[in-house]
Image 1: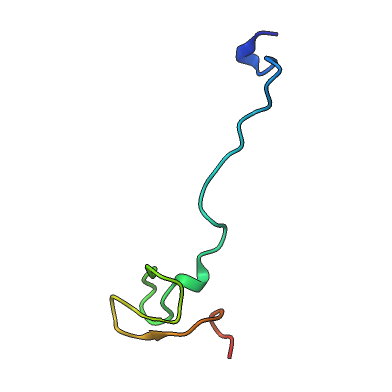
Image 2 (image 1 turned 180 degrees about the vertical axis):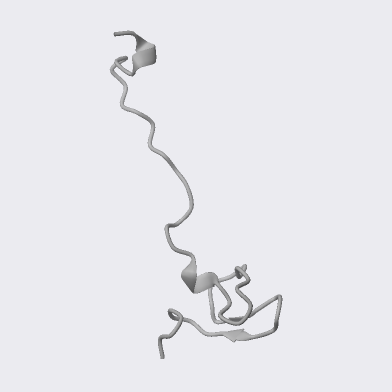
Length: 57
């Protein structure tokens, strides 16, 4: 095996990325992705988005 095959003795580099779920940052009125974590006013439609998960009261 060669180093190109991944047998160079080094572990594979971990993959990065965004958080798995952004549902709490989606406006329930217009589906805009919010810039900040609620509670916040939606920049697109002006709806008040409360903290918590959608449908949670």
